[in-house]
Image (tube, rainbow over all chains, first blue to last red; front, side, top):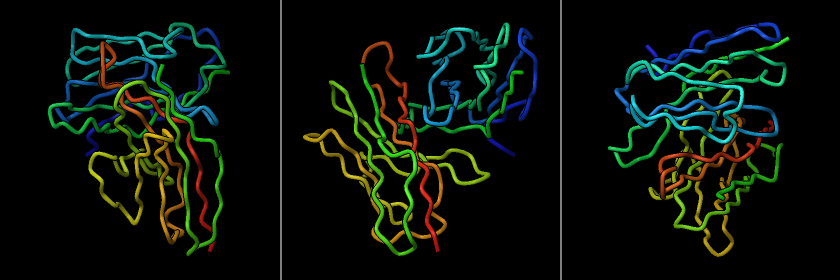
Length: 114
Length: 112
């Protein structure tokens, strides 16, 4: 079983619809992240959470919101999807207690907004 | 603000040739740098980090503070090295501690 699970893996939606991408992890890590991947732009941080009560904006948070329901769950929402939010979205976790600052990634959620 | 630049979107080499993927960074403190790799149909995963000074799958990367670079090198490329490679910089200070900033990525293709 995967340590970091993202659902759905693929979603096609229409402009203006609300979409939620979910991430769950079994690694017991406190830190969770949402990134989006776009060709030529690399990975850009949307939101991150260092524990259940800590939510922080990343570099491209406009148009997105998140919810940290539990240590193991971190959801990304697009309240009103627009075409330029078409991208591959990655959830990741890390455990700084190991001193490694290494991210463990999910398999990605491909979102297409028509 | 910290920044990571990978100047090459695409890099093609032949099997057995040396390969170097470039990474330059901008950071005011003492940097902690990583290379992540994404093989076809696999998850993005850590390849190596500079503090470990390790060689993984024949790849090495040396931090050059003078040139603010962290280039990834392999003397003899293999076809299985074909992948997307990301350089990443850890924000090690202030309220943003623990954030990783990624470069734009380089797609490496190793031809037979």
